[in-house]
Length: 168
Image (cartoon, rainbow, N blue to C red):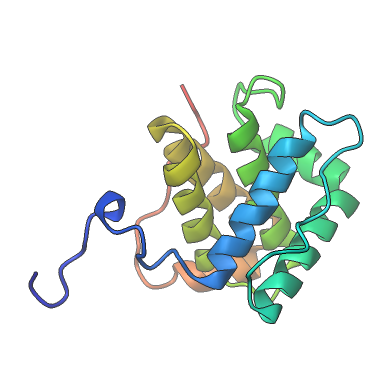
């Protein structure tokens, strides 16, 4: 492979999205997904996690913030999703959006671009191909409208603007 060439993500399971923080996000997503089926909500994170301490702290903080701000986050999702109610979205997509919006609004130290890239990678890994565009559109609209300092600061490098949050 030539230097600078991009490897196919499917052929590279140990690629750039295998950081401890990406794995922490996967644990949060798994907990939120399981919580959709359990009457008591998301289960606690496993005590046998092999994540480094900083990634565990991030995971716990993100999971806690989602639980604390769930109604507000769901209101934001409903506001920015065009023609899609929360109940109509897949459980995976809904929870990826919850995580991404939580990071945009309540995790000031996580750059907007990182939040979007990580959310899209989760969608690539765990959802349908059309979900990637849908999630991208919603997260960009949420960022530019609700936290423009964070979002616009990371968009000034000339990357094209996202499409709308239409899933259809």
